[in-house]
Image 1 (spheres, rainbow, N blue to C red):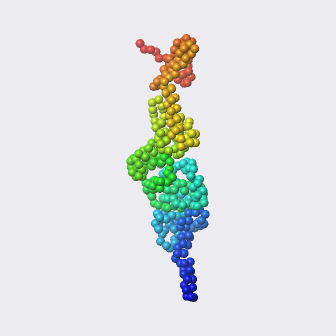
Image 2 (image 1 turned 45 degrees about the vertical axis):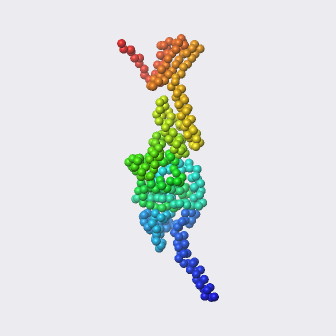
Length: 358
């Protein structure tokens, strides 16, 4: 009986201080899985040891760890969010993030629970004048939330080329909270301008993007002018509405793109207040614009108590003005001509009567 009690006590001690307990304590000591910002902060000395190693080294964790260290692609480290800059090729704009109704909820969630999934960063080569050591490739919203809270961010550190980073970014966003059509169009436009690929076809193949989809997104990015993008929150509009807007901005008989830009900007408040109604708003703009244009093209006729007095009919690069009998009964051709020339000269036009050649 005494022997049995001795064996049971020895087994309990072994469980307490044995390899299972040491493994658990080791994991807690080195922060494995501790995403919660409320966890005890690492000492400055500990942080320095963590970042002193190259980002692609297998010794990313403290040298005091004796157990085998996994590849860095399968491991994360806690990085002060202030040391991570946004990637210049990110596919989501800061304006879109600020206007995202889910962003404030994400900040609250991270404040209470920590970051559930690590972001992905790549090390910055050489010394950064602005103090950054990494740049974010995947996890713009999570990083922004951590910066707003002033906490560390868990991150996978990977050595990636620009193209590899772009592919990873696109892959990670698939099926998640995808960037808007406007942001994606700007993103792909930047990739082409910066030489990520020579042609649209190459870019589509490199990133695994549907060619037609890429073409439409680039149409949006290339054909909507700054006057509109500065007035309307285009990231809140869907791709269908944005393509309709591009179509309206195209030159059409009796319609100038400049005039259409002005008309669209006039409706900026409606777009921003009811983005889900953007297609309806665009249809209203088109109908009102074409109606006023047709009225203008058909000309106008003015009558008086003495009958038809004046007809005005616009044409291509000209305006035909006809004075009828009612007008000529109160003003001579010379008086009418003098009134018209004085009006045009007051507008800054220098006139000289052309002599008829025989």
